[in-house]
Length: 315
Image (cartoon, rainbow, N blue to C red; front, side, top):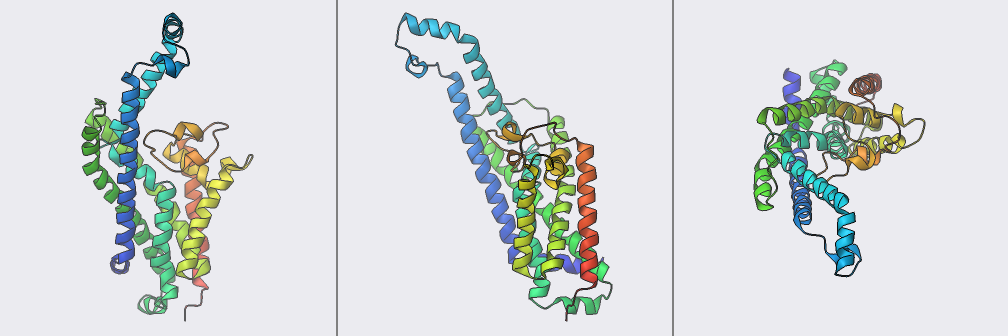
């Protein structure tokens, strides 16, 4: 515990606070854009469709087209109102936890952990301070575990900060854009937010494991950041390759978090920036498949990082 406390104190640096504030700002700006889109949907849903918009002149022809397209127009209105209501539900202070967790368990969170891994783990080599750490604690595996846990806890803190930012901004945006009331029970919102936040912990651990391995390989700040980010992006690219996509960590994240695939993930207010880059072909993997895959990814990264770190020259 003493070693972990020391690592957490090291994290109290401008890099962590800057990354956290940037993540909070990103979440709030995304919420503003989502609320604006949802407001546009409600306006369009309540506005009568003009004859010029349907490409026909005023008169009996327009009335005839309206009659024939009545069911389709009604369905479009229903879908737009449903999208606006869903966005309003996402901006609920309780349910906003699912939004924050989904974003940090996808590409934004992967980049956040890559930056923190570079400064917190790779920086020990660049700053030539790792030998001082090992002088105080000669058990390298303990040092590596403390680095991993502190990095993971930093990711959890970023999720909490984003949740807090959306808790404040959500009700303001809902009222400012006059979004429909979703009438969602508090218990239902809490269950959804708690489920997504809990699932995101394993994804953050996998991202931290990738950062740890990148630091053990490159032994430098810039190398760790670039390698971690490159691996995360490469996972998304590999997930789109037919035949191997199902067996990549990106797909396991999608299955574990329950992200929608392909175009179905594109909504007024996205709950992730991950599955939209993955093709929607084939069946979406389930939670169990994602759990096993991510656990294996974490184990492989941890074992490989430990094997490299034990043989690393730090003098």
